Length: 264
Image 1 (tube, rainbow, N blue to C red):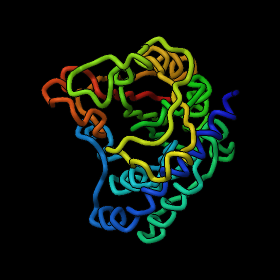
Image 2: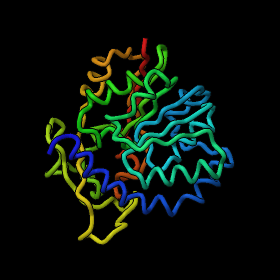
Image 3: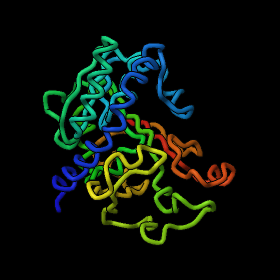
Image 4: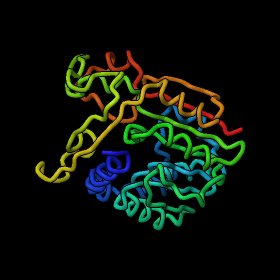
């Protein structure tokens, strides 16, 4: 399958995952109404005081997007391929009277009307692995940013793809644990520590993920003409990816990375 077909397959899987998000709309609204911001400690330094228009690529159910509004963004625009996820986001924004716009689109086909309109582009927390063309993604980011605009990525570290998620000690995933893999990995269903089995196993959509090496992401940003300002690796995790692994072991390898770049 080509990139578009793989993304459409992932759209079906994310529409299924949205079932779990739909159950949390009211809870998220109350969290956001209290001024809550769903960000990790490693993100806080750069995101506190964010301003202007922020475009959040692969925004899912909008909780993170609206957190950026609580942190100071004047307007947020969420782009996602799942229409059911965007319905959750719209319900939250409507309840909060938030200055938010939601765009149903494959991220690689983000509408041109948004070009050169973003003060910030934000993405991550399990986003890049669903993109089948990292160079095309970076080009979209570059065209969305205003001159002087910034890209901020806070993402799962690709090294975590190598390990068995269910093991109680650090073990290589013998089927998918290849840092240099060039083909998408396939799976059905969702981890229990994320959304779990929201539909019967026989109905679960097949989804496709790519392991993008750190060099792939940095190279794509550079080729798109963006200037790298900062890159860091963190032991901090944004979700419970290894529920059976002792915490002192998990913190010995990078679970996330952050990247800040600017359009000159």
